[in-house]
Image 1 (cartoon, rainbow, N blue to C red):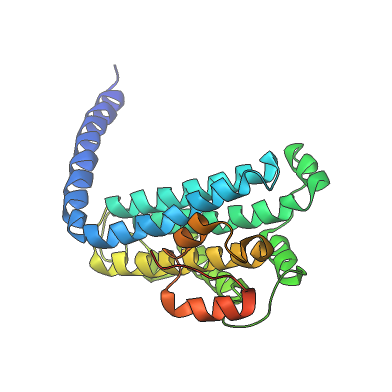
Image 2 (image 1 turned 30 degrees about the vertical axis):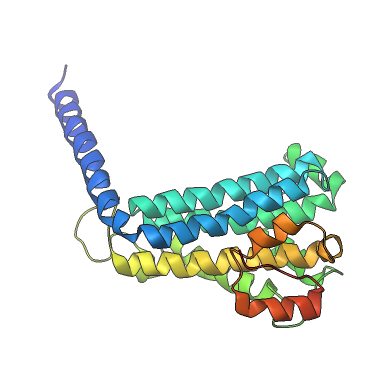
Amino acid sequence: MSLLLKETEANFISFNSEWRKHMADVSAELAKQEPKFLESYRRIVSLQAWRSFLEARISDASLSFFLEAQNDALTSHVFANLGSWRSALKALRSGIENVMFCLYYKDHSVEFTLWEMGQHKPPISDYMSYLERHPRRIKEPSVDPIPHLQTEYATLSKAVHASAKNFRMTKDVKGTLLWSPSLASFGQWQTRAIAVLLNLNLLLLVHFRNELRGAGAAPLREAVGLAIPAIRYPDIKTHLGIVLRQP
């Protein structure tokens, strides 16, 4: 074995041990934020409730995108628990994308077939534009999630591309950094996660409001209440005709 191969093997063994130990140390430090992570998990529960609701109402094809969005939200939550902040933010952005894909392909079966064939690859702005123009959209600022999702998507894109220094993992160090217990980074992630889950739930409420009026789907409306603050309930009732229940 050459000297280079021996050296890289030794470095690999050292690196492998170090990152696992550092991850465990950071995770243990962030475990002090367990009450806030519990709130995060509860918000994600709303997506499971939506998934159960959507199973009988949309195609398996479009539902598969929603399942991936749910997975993105959980991935973001887990990466945040480990202190991998940029990865956690990237997963949030992917969650926005997959909910948009779900709603778009729900209405476009031909385009989905083309997508499966690799022949339908519009930019993400096309999906957002579709939702902007959608006939079910209500342009009442208190219940319209589109402007907020556009803002969140743009902000999260800076994290994805590391184009903003405050989203970089390595902004305050001179070497690589996989995990960090930074409370400032935790706060950034928490703010983005709250906003994304709130506005994705609003988006789904807008699109499926006819099915949620009256006494129907009570478990879903209760789960949605985990992601949307009670102060928003009156506007949702007034403009969407949906009564949310605080758990």
